[in-house]
Length: 328
Image 1 (cartoon, rainbow, N blue to C red):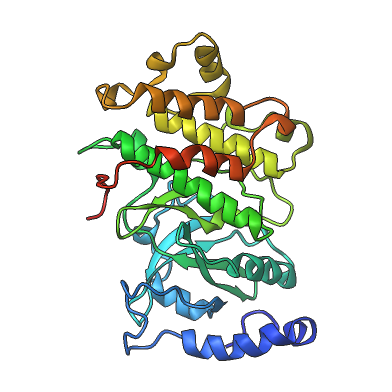
Image 2 (image 1 turned 120 degrees about the horizontal axis):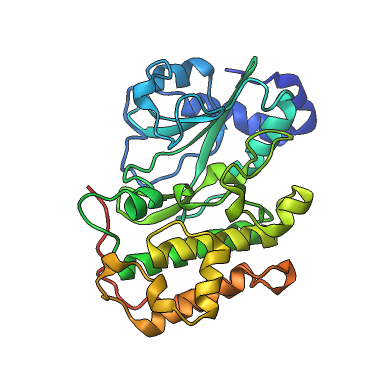
């Protein structure tokens, strides 16, 4: 089953190697349906063959592309289905993104240790020749970006927007507590809705798009100011990006932070709010979220809140339990 050369794993991580040999055999797609979709259990992190993932994605068919970018993008995400009927999301990296298989495997194993109900968890990887792929739980109910910016049937109600903010803060706090505080290019496309219609943070952003590549692919107007100076992501940079998501949630639009901060300073919070909410929101709650966004977007990284601060601020706003979600 070996994807990456087994020798370096046996030498550097004997406990992982032994576990991997057992898990790879167990995780190999089978027809018994023991890992069927909806089982509720997240499989242990393991290795996949390129053949497994090729079959699962119908030979990486363009019809299976679920990433928002086109099929000309360097890294593409595909929807796939294993023989055991588990749906998966497969991120396929460009050929030159991770030239060293050992480095890619080490990074994947690090992210693969994480398990949290607010994450779309990483369940495996493949490192076969020049091929580098990550495998994650599949989230069937689209992204926050689609529901906020490209909705057709219903906009996101205010209680769900509060839930998104809180759940993603919880995911970030968990990752930080587990020693993985860096998240690359966080935006509304990284927030996905699971089979229950609840928001989760994609685990793919916990790994860089390449060994040495840039971590932000979005418009530079939305990137942390310190990233423009040194090109590095820090835990404080992640908080800044979370602030841009808060702006997305309150406004229903992708507003450049500088423009939004000008509106906030001018006390034009109501003008900032999404008109599609039809004023069905608490002004007090909205003010708290906007204030938190403003703190996250501070120019000086040290002045931004911590992930624990995010959770503490957003937790009291989770009042409504019967939240309209997006499950099919």
